[in-house]
Image 1 (cartoon, rainbow, N blue to C red):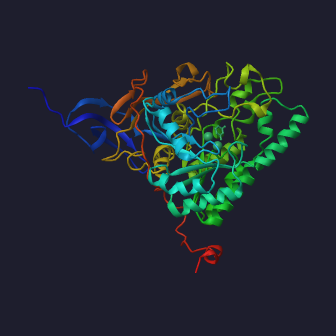
Image 2 (image 1 turned 90 degrees about the vertical axis):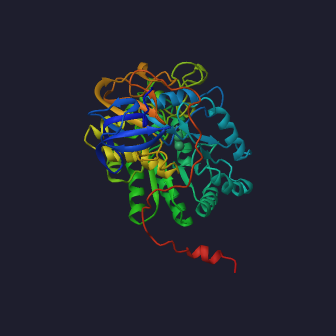
Image 3 (image 1 turned 45 degrees about the vertical axis):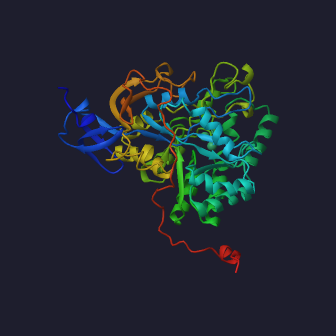
Length: 488
Ligand code: DUC
Ligand code: ZN
Ligand code: ZN
């Protein structure tokens, strides 16, 4: 007689870390979900011994770009297969990339296109944020339907000619989201300042990659962050500022939250680990590999970001994975040419290294607790974007998305990564941790050496509304202008 098992898999003797607790227990998994958490669980069909190992929820990378169309010849190096394979090997089991509206087209067209790109290709679970580039009245009218269908977050750009919205357009979107729910995500950089500085720098012959940072000083982000916060205050609705990089923007967010405004913020590994020096010298094009927007900053901004990670100013830690190859003609050197900094594709890879970098530098480096790590990389991203409690925690009923950690020293090399990008900005860095195992809905997709997932294993997730704790319990009193605008 074949033995019967209570569980498909049991992770035994784990040191379970959630956003709130750390404790020893076994995790029993049935049909991809966590069925039981306790000590001395009955045998599973498969038993995995995690003795002495920290086990965290699978990461939720709430900001990454996969297979997003670019202006030819430029192309992202990762599609949904290679990007999500890389995510899994670095401990991330849910990704939320962007479906970008092409101006003059509608949002459903963008959504349909992204489903085609992801379906049958994704190796981990996925959802889509929408990028709104043309919020004309019929698009705004369609938003409530899309929110109800599970597309509950919207990226709004204050820069990039092909993407940016005016302040008035941002107000229009915020007003709809205030009524119907969802989370506006704002890319805050002042477009006119960047354009003006870029012209000045080019006129002076300063076109090397390093001048990308010169064209975006801290105040460019600070001013736009302040403006975005003011727009959110006027409409009286929460926003999330994405990829916050500099100490001056951090100050703006701190002041807004001290006033009780529901301003949330995200940051990324590049803003605690890379500096402007990584953009190289006048004589070198190699710095193009670290060109991203906002640009890497300095040590004093790193400190401000670390402080914000530790004290709750930041809710979300994402990769902003946006990979372009250094070699070839579709990446950092478009057409194979060393171009002026304004033409270098913005973005760096990081979907696989996001969790190990924060675990190594933050948790093992003594800057944040393991519980804060879980909050920033899984629980709050899941809450912010309507994936919780299915994703983002270790709890009975949640998907069995789990990472078993291995604390070991090694030197990071791009050869060990699983993306389709020909470099990592963190080449040669010593890391102290890497996932020993990643499970997606109970299936081992990474065992520390080999990717064992497959294209099409990832499921699309229609998301709910945010369930993130509010910054303030401030009573929602109608503003004067709203009262005045009410039709009697
Ligand atoms: N900046 C963005 O806003 N998105 C992708 C990458 C980047 O550098
Ligand atoms: Zn952005
Ligand atoms: Zn981005």
